[in-house]
Image (cartoon, rainbow, N blue to C red; front, top):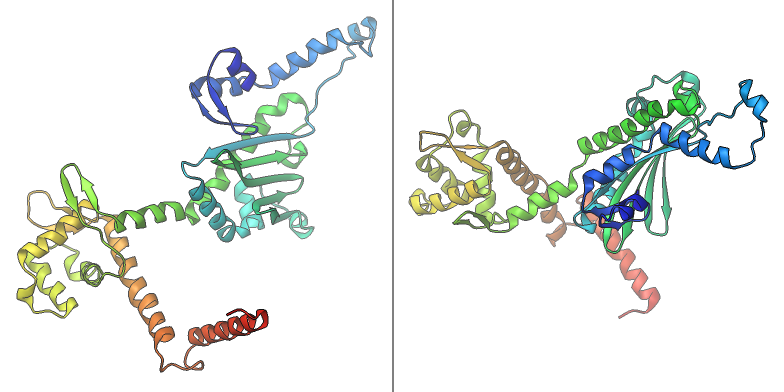
Length: 361
């Protein structure tokens, strides 16, 4: 493909055995798609005509000829990340959350095959995590077929490579002759896409990280500005805790209905939350896409993203952050008072002993 792009004068930037960027991506894809069984067969026959042939002309006329077979076929997909850090964060989470991809029930979905008990019993379905230096890779095995995922990096460019290598076409009930290449191609690429689909369902850490950072920064929509909704801010936490009250969900809420609830959550008198202050909060919630105005009314309702965000903010703070910090930061808590505090005490003791051993100040 790279040779064809250079011959046609199409600019591109290489990424090992792939490309990171191409001026005419459509042409690059068409070049790849044309590398089919007919082109491979034509290439083989061209050189067979030029090289000494093991069969004489009389033998060839009698029907004796060589045919190509597929010993190994690899089908890969490389997805380029706009930020290298995002790619590494995603892949590390993928490994943690998808270590069970090699289980029989998952392999059946990935390769669209019903597994026999003998295949499961002899361990030909499994997952392995391999590390070369600091670069991890995820391997999924089905009989003689292996799917592999790893990060490709070059010149600050990072791509997630997903590839399926079929070492025995008979694993899928397909012959090895070259004419079976389209069927193997379909199996290989479908396996790649199914792996990514499973991972997409279980992991969106980069999307979540981006959403979290957006809430921590001021929002700007056209000429309107809305301040940040920082996690842990007392007013923000009280606002989210109020928004998820069931009484506000069926028909939405108005400014005057939200004011006394927010004042109560903050421990203030109702007059202290003025209509202007409430409008300020409603505007920043709207600009961040967490609420929307009900058409033709002065009422608001939570968006789907807003409801989930408010639930997560309020529950994470109330059930994880606040009680956890109360245990580890309270001087009256002993090591036996909670498992969390006991763990921190053990950590402090181990660090103290380590520094004493190293004679560190």
